[in-house]
Image (cartoon, rainbow, N blue to C red; front, top):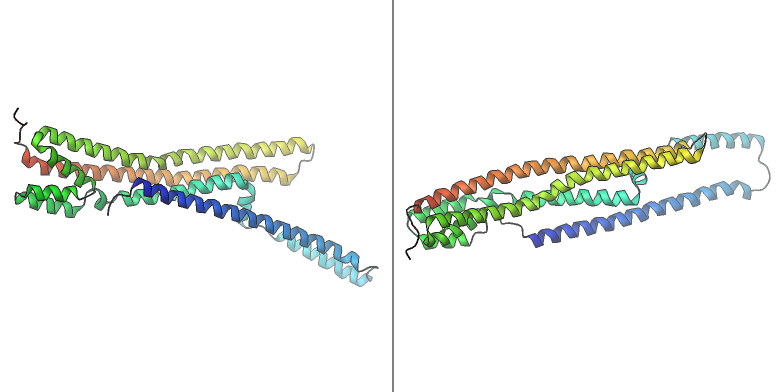
Amino acid sequence: MRFIEPIFSLRVLFVILAASVALLVAGSGAFGQDDIDLDAFDGAAQEAPAEGGGQAPAGDAAAGGASDSSDSGSSEGKKDSYLVWMYRSLGWFFTIVFSLLSLTMVALIVINIVALQRSALAPEELAEDFGALLDQNKFQEAYELAKNDESLLGKSLATGLARMPNGFDKAIQAMQDVEQEETMRLEHQLGYLALIGNLAPMIGLFGTVVGMIASFQAIASGGAAPSPQKLAEGIATALFTTELGLAIALPALAAYDILKNRLARFVLDVAVLSDNFMGRFSNVGAPRQ
């Protein structure tokens, strides 16, 4: 398995983000349409008794009162689902922000898992074939084999053999430079997970402040008897933003630590293999002037 090119990774990430924005816009429109249809239905239901004209009999009135009470009780008993409640509490802004963060986190985890495979960093087949060619003193074939391999081990071995005519010390230094450069590139790609892990709780804290301000505003404008519904809406916003911020940060930071340790282990394996192979040329000195 080869390295994922940075351009390809960015294209995949862009497609995922664009699709998520489209789904969120469509979802918000669907929520709004459902609310409009329900309001129209409620208005039609309230105007229906007035069109009949006249008063209903006492029995019918009693039956109607009982049915109305049962309908009101059933309507009060109906509750929104957890996702709908979360969407209404977050609003469109926090919904889009947390959705983009979560999808970006998943895309980065998948990209880094694919990139940090042993077959992409230190393939065993390359090590076996390279060692066999060195045993047969086929140095040119060994160089071509390492040069055509895009793994970190292949780049390191090809660089070492190419610089060997300049001396053993310079070849080792060139190999270390290649390994360090490639490690920095992978760590930079991996660091975005840590950024999301640190950014998500801060956005959740910002939402907490926004929700608490809304609740205190309801208390200030409500006088002696503030609306419990307004208070609940502000508190729900504060809690949901905190919950989502932590829910995104925890897997992002855990994946970052796990993948960082995985990268360090594979880089160490590459360094050990490269030193072992290049150690056969330790008697090669600097070129004569």
